Amino acid sequence: MKPFFALAVVIFPAMAWCQQLPSLDVLLDRLDAYAKQYQATLPSLLCDEQITSQALNEKGKVTWEVKIQSTLREARTENPYDPFREQREFKRVDGRRARRVFQTPYFVEGGFAGLVGFKSWEQRQCFDYVLTSGDNGQTVRLDMTLKTTFTNPSCAKLPAGLHRIVIADPETGRILHTERTIAPEAAEMAPKVYFGGIDYAPQKLGEQTFWLPSRFYAHDAENTGRMVATYSNCHRYTVESKILPGMSFPAAGQQPH
Image: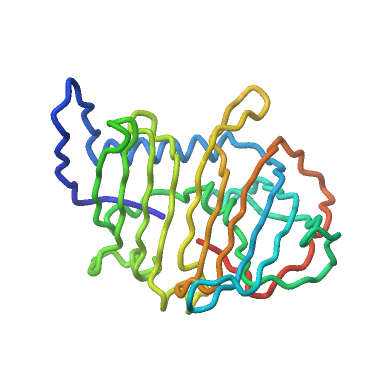
């Protein structure tokens, strides 16, 4: 998604020292630079994936749960706006060898690939912003809310009710956590994921260290379907000309873009 506008006044408690927040434009430039470098240097990779998919009733009780073990492939593409193609090889479902076709309560595709890419930040004028400090100035939180009125027609292409939160290192722009929510009606129409969030953690790939997604969480607008995926043992993947076909998964799969 993308950013630019109102800066909140942040008052720090009296301390022996306090760290100055970067200006909004400076922070957005750092986030943009970090995202572009990330996209340009992150190689194709493989990760072990653990998925828990659940259906819940109106009281929040889990009525159906499926646990999946899979291998996640993130293969680079030539598309700068969609830099990674996501594929899975399902290994086990509820402790048993995965069948070629199986059902889950709630399944989201593209969480790792969609949120690791960050997209680009060229639509800054479409959003209002609130910038605050966290962890005694060690991190910065950026709340981005889609404007209710705008003059740029490109803003109308963004999902209604779009709200995004980014937590980052203020000096480097390194993203530590990101999440986004859209209006329930926008989630029904696309369909797109109502809420998706991701935590990042350092992972060494060869001689380089990347902050890769470590946990992805998504749910629908009524919180009657949700999915949590965690990633581990990520390593470089050399894309071959012949790619093994992925397993089938529910038709309800959605893209969190």
